[in-house]
Image (cartoon, rainbow, N blue to C red; front, side):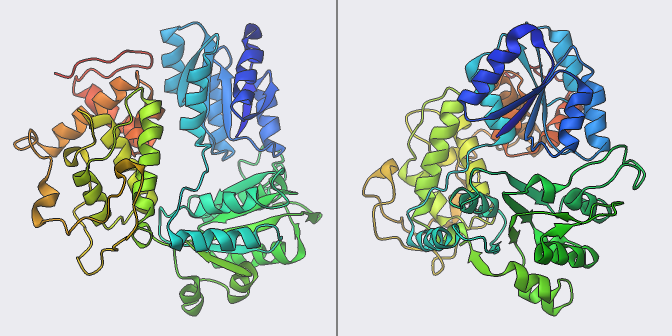
Length: 468
């Protein structure tokens, strides 16, 4: 992860930087808002900004939005000034970190905000074959098209390929083609010159130049407009780009990876995707299996997330009971690994007793039909040594764990879960949103609604409270 620290912070900046570096972050420093913006425009490759609350945090965030820099900002300041924390959060900062810096707090924020964990956990033969193919193609500079359902870990696989490549010491840059409006994506990819369009207040280098020497991931490439596909094709073929408003082509040295959750061959047939671009990207193709196609990995991944979120929340890493594991194996997992992660997050928070029981496994209603359910024939994980696939779940399985909930509205249960989670996280919005499996924006909207209704909402730094 790449961290940019902005401000003087009365000497504590050195300590904060050293802590971040000890956690694997690459740290850069500037003492002003203008210096930070200039660094970002020059394609400094930043994942997270940490800014002193004595500076104009609101102005920094406004400029980031105006110039379409989509990266999180964390405010920090000397002591535990609640007014400064509230002011920074209201300005748009994700979190507030009091200084002198606490190593565990900084590590937690770095992980929660930037999600720097990219390990692929697997022992299922279906996934093992995919990893062997990735190991073979990674050392080359060939383009790779990674496909699979949403939540299968396509970006994770792209990072895995980058780490195994000859470019691993250089930047890995990702751009989500589905998240950026078509009229802005060209500038995001290729950069622009000052004054080339309304809002272009300064020259900005694009993702191609930021990734120069390294790897560029075009995430959800199927969402790109056909007009821009032509310019992208030229950039990949010629290894040169034209900034918006520029007059000279710029040479770049990159490896291109792309992901899609659609069938690109079908998109080509119906005219939504250029055939020549498809073949240019599809030198190698890696399809990630859905989680239901790799059943031996379900207990292993579940166990990983149990330990991860138990440690993050200071809770015991309870094992899965046989009944809970049976529910996981029977589930269809439309959201794949992402859905499993969120399920384990909630289970860790809600579990009581010595094991994670079925009553805290909150799943959607879709389960595999008996004929579709995989039947692994080897021990599944250290969670339950020697355990094999359970018999089909009874039709009433979806109703397990509703004791105490009957008679309450969904809104009431959701409110209590959100507020208890936030209280457990000491008011930390980013941690709470991550645990709940929702976006920080959704969480803030919910909290505003509760505040408007007169319900007390924990502020950053407030301890746990008892729900009424």
